Amino acid sequence: MTPQTDIEADATVDSRGAACPGPLMDLIGKMRDVDQGAVVRLLSDNEQSLGDVPEWAEEAGNDLVEVVEGDEHHEFYVEKA
Amino acid sequence: MSEHVVILGGGTGGSVLANGLAERLEPELAADEVRVTLLNDGPDHVYKPVWLYVPFGLREPEDGRRPLADLVDDRIDVREARVTGIDTDEKALTCRDSHRPVEYDHLVIATGSTLASGEVPGLEAGGHNYYSESGAEALREELLSFESGHLVLSVVGSPHMCPAAPLEFTFMADDWFRKRGLREDVEITYTYPIGRVHGNPHIAEWADPMFEERDIGVETFFNAESVDPEAGTITSMEGTELEYDLLVSIPPHRGVDVVAEADLGERGWVDVDKHTLEAEAAEDVYAIGDAATTGVPKAGSVAHYQAGVLAQRLASRIRGRPATATYDGKTLCFVETGMDAASFVEFDYETPPSPAPPSEKLHWSKLAYNESYWLTARGLL
Image 1 (cartoon, one colour):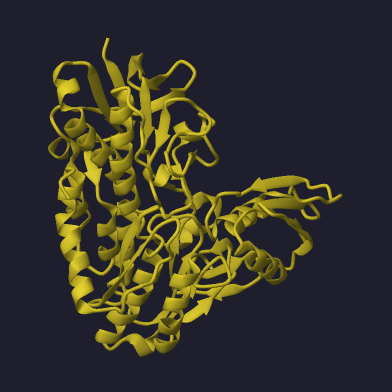
Image 2: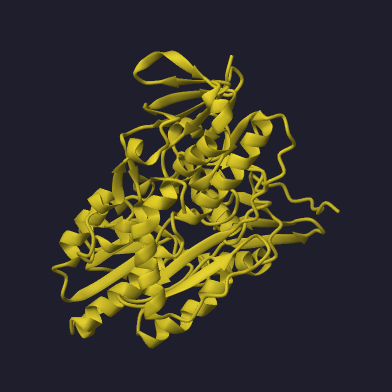
């Protein structure tokens, strides 16, 4: 099942297939590039991301707008503070 | 017309593959039905694990260099060339010093990693590293005379070569200062980009107590945003600032530009099927070692095992047989935990690592392997 949401992302990082910490590092790399207020969507099929991404978003002061869990992968929407 | 295999890069992956093909395709090479060309941008093969020991004055960079021509089978055409373009539609490479393109039937990209310190402002001027020959030598100049102050080891980029090496350097430095009676005057802090001390949670869990026992400071979720060499500070995008007297960093890494420009993946890495090592964006193109995005560490053992798999797959394809060998993610690493003790980990796509208890025997095993590595490069071990 493909995750569903109405949120529109300004950029997408597809880290499906990457082992830990690949997805989080890919997200951090993209967050360095985008402007304040931009929403980045991370696609990850690594279960560890469900813990890593919210923890980092809180630590960095960014807003984890939504996590959409799917059967084959999860989607994380993070807004740059 | 003979079939042409071109290997780009003469590091561990490229050398092991070239020697593997020389052995597997012996009759075809003798009959001139197959040609194998290894292109490298210099005359030498470089064994990078030596660099960890250079800052401590234990090894010289030259210990990790040997002429590629001495390591690769005579049946392989070894050429020094700087490739400037990869055209996967025309199946041809352009080289800086030649107007004639190199045409291929099968292309293997084994171009490894490069450092991208410039991506973090101030890092080049303010930080040292042991991830290059010149970096390791410059760090040696600082470290050998460093007797007091704050040493910060910051993992700035990930993925990076040898994921164990930041832990190794930190544990070695702690032990080295302790043995010399200087540890009370040297504060050590280790920073890591995510919420634990290593990307792999099993290795992080194993290493955690050692940081505490040895009084090594830890800053997790520390993604370096800038370095101020004048003030001696490093600041993270999470808002933490650390003052340092000696900054040792693991700089951001990239693949090589010519691969990035060929649209085979991001940042010069090649997106591949992690089992067959075939590029996702082009036919008859493969990648091994650091250049391949497989999700396992950028480590010599990975390049070594992937080269063995690809030698089998290419030999099968050239003979018109189904290619059945696949890479299972096998990775081996010795991990130094001090100046005279080491651990050992082995894992693959399905099996997580379970680090062995540190021992002097494993430390000597690591040093012994470093000496016998040249047999690996020759395809013998």
